[in-house]
Length: 141
Length: 92
Image (cartoon, rainbow over all chains, first blue to last red; front, side, top):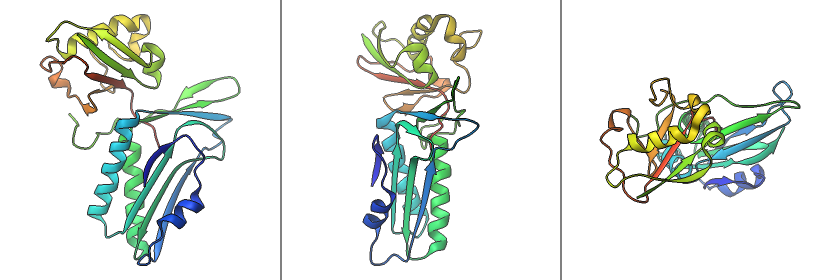
């Protein structure tokens, strides 16, 4: 499943749903809102059509380049508080090594190219989290 | 003709989230950017440099595809095109 959601992400349910008989490993990456020097909440914004397409491309690349059985990526947007899940990536594979490698590839790639932005809100201030201007696959100058 | 412009994050705060700009038939991307520069006014320095060119970190798309800097003067827009302008991404 590839999804952008405004709802709470249920990691347990997603892991159960991803399981298949041939899988011996499901590596799960869970990105969480961190209390970074007084962050109270975060607003996440998305260019949704492009973000979904880009996540699908990343999934397809991972499936092509690693011997894995499945990729699920769900990214939350909207208002999130400290401790809430921003992102869940689940890679299912026969064995753990390739699942770990693919998971790292997916999260690194996602941070470079998926059009999502974060604004951090502190008690008395706010700031946009500095981003990466990495190329969007296949369309870069 | 009308071109729809989507701006995100800091650029949305400057330009608005979803706007339509009027450009002459056959206008190229540079023409649309010029209209955006006028709209941004004093806050445009975040998006455009002193010469009026897009700052190097700014990402520009037309109908969901990234636009190369070298194509700005030649890329002809069509009525109803969607132009997106945004700063570097920060998801995950």
